[in-house]
Amino acid sequence: MVIDDKTLSKLESLSMIKLEDDKKEAFKQDLSEVLSFMDNLKEIDVKEIDCELKHFTPLREDEVIDANIDVSKLSPFVENGFFIVPKIIE
Image (tube, rainbow, N blue to C red; front, side, top):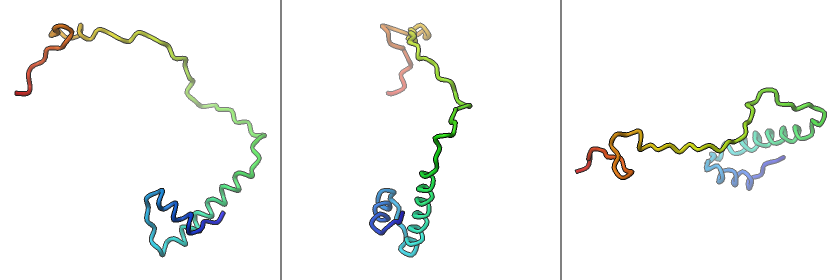
């Protein structure tokens, strides 16, 4: 795939990168080579390859539990459901 000036300009805008004029041609060439390599990868037939995952973290079922605890019991200074704390703002 060949990268033209319009595509390069759009990529500059999307990536918020300003390329110097003397480096644009080299960048277009490099990017074209990368995209050509990606096109080559698309042509590889991988249907016969066994893609079994051997190393992964097993998933577990989500369980609904009651995690709400009465935090007011954790403090000795509670009044009407509110924590009593020292005044720090005058």
